[in-house]
Image (cartoon, rainbow, N blue to C red; front, side):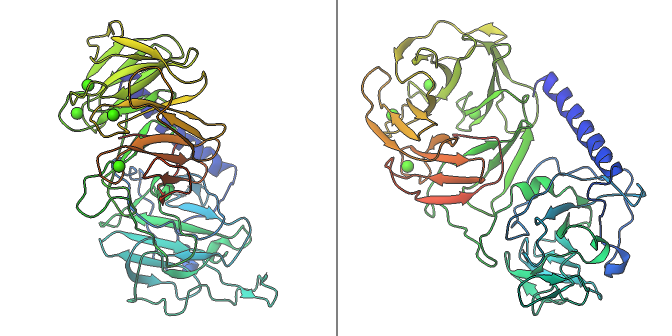
Length: 458
Ligand SMILES: [Ca+2]
Ligand SMILES: [Ca+2]
Ligand SMILES: [Ca+2]
Ligand SMILES: [Ca+2]
């Protein structure tokens, strides 16, 4: 990360904490951790609050199956600021009885003696808490009487019972100290030593189910194959690298760059590992890092004109990725097979050619599997995809429609067979739609990957 990036990250975290306190003071969602009346243990608020997990995203199932919303209220004032909020409140738009499912496979720990809160101890030692499950009676018409006489645990959910990830635990409601506020689940995530961490980034990236108990762990990558995996970046310049393109995989997360930077991935030092890079359009600089960790850029140089879009790829097949340019205003590609260095300018392009219509979004891939990347373009308004296999002007080798307006396109070898095919990421749904043969039609694989600003080719 750049120095300004580091400063920005610190400021951003301070700002988020400050904002959370302000929200707490004005009384927004003024409820919190397990109330004494819920019967569960109430932790003393640590002071200061434990830092959120800085590296890594816990692979988990989203605890609510149904329409919901939430915001990051980690550490917000509760009970007149005598304690901080240790979870995330997942709201269900006023609906009680929305299914609540196990975030991971594990054993039911404590269950409140009065309805309805519980702990799940995961098989890996982590644990999750589910507070304010329903405690009201459901009427024949489906509505709920606010009588406190219902029971929000699913049948058989009691201490010592083992459940599978995604299994129904109960239904949301307003029990405990959430009476008289909107139904929701207060969800907490605890590390194996019992420390509550900010669950929000983990919830953001959690797999969402369409019905309880159904966990789709399918991957486009056949067993034993070496497949590429997309990289995601959020609006706060945090990068998310996962081991595999499926649910339950390890995710490495770290900060690099500033919001507004154009992110890219590439193997800048030819060691076989792709790492982050970014183009800062405000100063025309490229910042490249050779490790998948937080830190300063290893390589810095400048290039291009305002508005240029960087293209990361191996355009000469030497095993090293470089940064070339797409100039949207002209529909022109400039190929450069060396990196700049030492804050210098990148030399003249080795060659250039016209390709595409102004306004189309470029992407890079080895579509014919010959070891050399070439350029494709995506018209986000219509989902029109076209690419060439040669780095020259000419008609597209392949063209088809794929995705919806607003989708983000990337190309990669998702199935490990040697050629790159497209996929689109839909920020509005958090889903990644994989196409394995560069042909129109429905996705060959659809995977929930989480809420991010964008997706990058590996
Ligand atoms: Ca590398
Ligand atoms: Ca190269
Ligand atoms: Ca190629
Ligand atoms: Ca492939």
